[in-house]
Amino acid sequence: DIVMTQSPDSLAVSLGERATINCKSSQSVLYSSNNKNYLGWYQQKPGQPPKLLIYWASTRESGVPDRFSGSGSGSDFALSISSLQAEDVAVYYCQQYYTTPYTFGQGTKLEIK
Amino acid sequence: EVQLVESGGGVVEPGGSLRLSCAASGFTFDDYTMHWVRQAPGKGLEWVSLISWDGGSTYYADSVKGRFTISRDSSKNSLYLQMNSLRTEDTALYYCAKGGHYASGSSPSDYWGQGTLVTVSS
Image (cartoon, rainbow over all chains, first blue to last red; front, side):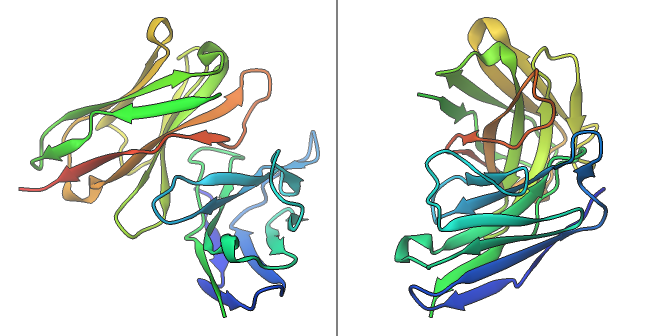
């Protein structure tokens, strides 16, 4: 199984500042035939189901604010929030869908400093 | 509007069985892979199972393999998870999630239900 490891486990950032969450996979999730990274990012607020933010490592889902961006390739990825807003407080998960089981990272709790 | 509504959760004793259902609407159910994902209280997300658009392929997490069975009924636009030999560690909120179109290959889950709670306790 591909193990997904996020860092840090929790993060406190001031409003308006940049937040960056990292995700590392135990093997590459880059499919060479189409040059796509099978990596997604989700946001989960308390009492709500997860919401897809980013897929193919860097493509924003429709309706997601452009302050959210994804980067990375192969085994190392990052989710950045350029200017943190109060409504961004949540737990963020990365997930690989390169191969079953479609494993998630352990989650990163993002809070306001 | 895509809607996924789970049902069937409840309290069951260890060793017991439960069948979860997910009613789908707002998209062509037959064209999409579907998933079950669970979340133990206060914990992270754990992918459980997927079924291909035509029901021809199914996959499971090692933690549930041999005990859980995923299925779908296109006539009812519904997804199911039959859970047998339940253990206390299966206690979780179970989400139904929409996967990718059959023409797209592996894809993330872009829509999720609100979940149904399964509690395994004596």
